[in-house]
Length: 494
Image (tube, rainbow, N blue to C red; front, side, top):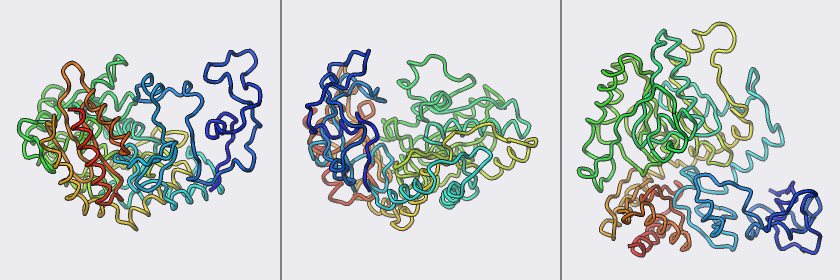
């Protein structure tokens, strides 16, 4: 694959060692920023010698960090202490100066098959040459239907109708809208209330944010959706600390749904939960909890929605968390590992009966007034097909299941280190919780993150919890390095 840089600034950033004798590229009538004042003007396209093969680009620090408002980031700190990833391959990222950084987080829970997979790259290239885009509003293209069929082969039995989105956030909002549409279509228009869970994360759209239960994601934005309530979270450290797999205590917490039904009557449309709450710091469901929640939803005519954006596609050693945990929802959201993050894509898997009720109960014409310009995008569909083929041919869920005991033992070997107050693990994911520094929440974990990165290991932090979720291709040597580096960093941050 050859990369062609379309914009002057873009390839100037990537190739900052080019001769800088030309005049400033400042636009007439616009004062250049200090970081851009001395940029050379360059031809509109790079010369042939500047076209570099994939994974051979040697990237230096960009000459301007100002324009990009980074998501979920301390922009002020980053732009004075940038950490830049220039390329990725297998289990590793590489920085601009060539330092290898072992990926302990599968990017953001999403690169389950590892980085730079040739099969996925070639599928995207091939599709881009055939057809770059086609709308799916009242039209279709074959590859979107094929991708939906491949997803439906993996989802739990009965969840065979697939609605494509572009992210986990869009999947969450789509699932909630489908739930409301279904209740109305079956003559239950009074069911307008949505129930989430404390410490839940369902993306950043207003629907997912409303049923989500992480305060930091909500407090800047004022009022959320009306008619939303929450179940209590399942974190019981006094009883379940250092649990391996499903903790033993907490199934009774699902009974809080009975209290909400008593309060709100038959107005609840759906309950949305993560099978394993990931973004809040890896909260594994107690034994029997999800089964009880399923029973109560059935009893009261409430739909159960699983957010499988993190747990889907092998993370827990099965295709989806529903399979590992033995509970089938009515609706299931997914994203991240669906395309190995090579092209943004999400999806919602819907019970056949829900689809039939909405579609067959509608008058002639459009049945669900919802969708996205890029639903089923050809390049995303190609990436999904190639990714799911890799999952099958390499048995990535099976590899995760086989590596789980070694990963679990490595995680729990950190017990007893300074300030480690809990460790939770299931599949190839673990959360290591640290005590907070007095008056400085998150500071200890941030120090651990920065030290690990400088030592060549990427981890993720949420509050003072360290979350690890390496690609499912991880070998024992990678796990040893991840936890060895993390152990040293935790001791250093004591």
